[in-house]
Each structure stands twice: as structure tokens, then as C-alpha cells.
Image 1 (tube, helix red, strand yellow):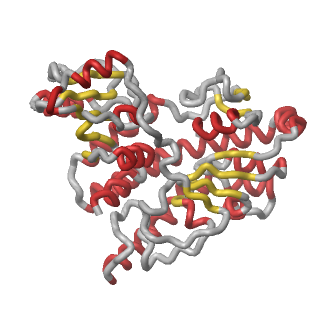
Image 2 (tube, one colour):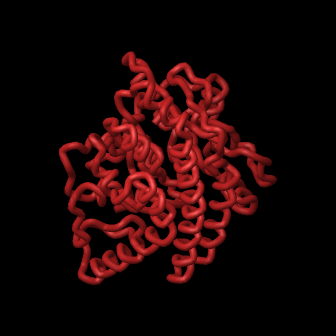
Image 3 (cartoon, rainbow, N blue to C red):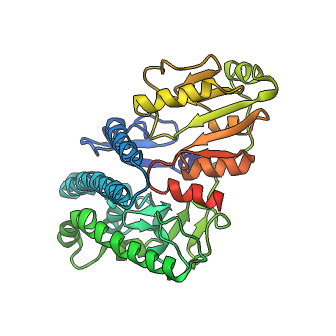
Length: 369
């Protein structure tokens, strides 16, 4: 979203961003937009996500049995239920604040740009009767295509199944069962939080009708990277739009990279949301890195692992795109998030996957496939 906002600003548009007080990825001060800060929290902070990921890793280490997978699914949905309950309360707070809503209307905005993973921006756009543009990969009830285009389960695999578009009869049955199970989870854990809000503020309108009202869907996927899928004229695929040629590295990183010699460099990052892993896992990874001839640049916060080798540099932040584009980068150890996968493909760097949550398993499966 930051890249889109910066590009809009560069083209002369005035951008206002509505954020909550605890927003750690949307800063209150920026030269590219005017922040409108709501005096409440949305609950999606680093501490919440660190605890959540630690619990998921604990479950995944039990193996790939059916019961471990079921436990993993339920843990994810319970966490999502907590978040969506907070987001529903946020929406109600916004709509009940008549002064705030009138102040938005008085500005006379031209368009609403939002991520439909939450309903906040979607409902505000409907209330203000403004054109609606999605920056989207997921809606809160799953993959975005399911809301706007025919999606036959005979050749469209559900996220999380690690199936391809060429399914056997048994795999199609599994895909249908997974779809039904997912719809039950979404209805129980997620959409139930919004039913009262929809009735209170929009009468008989469903959230699906609000999604389908969007004028433009900017999909953060590359059509070539995905399996075949029916689409619509108002969908623009922009996967990898953040990728660009590498810039020179900061001097301290360039010196470290050059010191790797012929062996090159391995970089490890688990994305914006996951800056550290449970202690015992970090120790195991650090010990494994210490045995390699390559130099390692690892995005890691918190206390350094005791087993950290002399060949490993820990950083709070890294210029990921620039490192991936460096000639000495040999491997990218990544969680499989969409942005990181696209950047690795763009620069032609092999990925060693460490999938944790959401669509990461599927992204890495498609690379392997």
C-alpha cells in the first residue's frame, strides 16, 4: 500500500490515510499523506502476532498428521476471530461517531482505496457513496476471486490444500470438502462478527454485495504465477509491482557481502510481521548457519542466539530488494509471503522456504510445482 500511496503523491494527488493509534506499519507522520488517527486500537500489533506465530510453530512441529493440521487450522481461526471482533468494534465506533463521519463527507474525497481484508474501508466507501478501489490479495472470507468471478472447484484449488489445477477425482473431492469446511469456519469465526453491523447500518445488504460494488480490483498476484482462473474486466493483476532493479547497498552491508568471497551470501527474512522466532528455533537456525561457508544476513530482532556464528550478521531491517538483486546473493531463506516470492523470482534467486501462516505454504508449493 505504501508504494501505491507514494506513486499517487508523485502524480499530484492529495492522499489521506485513516489509521488507528497502535498502527505500527502506517506512521502518523509522512511526506506522502495526511494521517487521520482514530483514538482506539485495532489489536494487530507485533506482540499479538509473535505469540500467534509461536503457537503455530509449536503445533507444526508435531508433524503433518490430520489432527495436527486441524489444530493448526483452528488456532489460526481463533486468532482471526479475535482480530475481526476488534475490527467490527472499530467499525461501529467509526459509524457511531457522527462528527467524524460528517468530517469525512465534508472533505469530498474522490475515491476510497482500501484492502478488503477488513470491512472498514469498504463500509466507509458505501456510506459516503464513493468509488471504491481494492488493493487486494484476500478478502476477509478468502481468496478475492471467489467474490467476483466463477470459481469452479474442479480445477481451482482452495488455498491451503497444496493442490494444482490438474486434480484427480479424489483430489477434487478433497478440494470440495476443504471448501465446505472453510466456509463453515469463516461463517462461525469471522462473518458472524459483522452480521449485526451490516443490518444496523445497511439493512439487507450483504458483505459480498459490498465487495462486488468495488469499481477496480488491484490484485497483488501475477497471473502467470497462479493456476488458471476465470477473471473479470475490472481486475488488474499487479503482482511484483514493488520489484525494481537493485540499488547500491549501504557501505557496511556492501563490505560484509564482498567479504563472502566466492561462496556468496545467504539472506534470511520472514517478512514484516515476523521479526523473530521462538528462542529454541532461532538457536537451531543459527547453529546451522554457523556451519556454512557462506556469509549470512539475517533479519532478526531481540536477543542474539548463543549459537550465532562469526559468518552471520543480524540486522533489524534490510534492503531486501537490493540484496536479492546483488550478484553475490545465492539463496533467500523466506517464509513464502507474496512480496518476497515475487522479488526472488524477479531477481532469479532460489528460495529455501520456511512457511508459517496464511498463503505461504501455497506460494512455496507453486514454486516447487
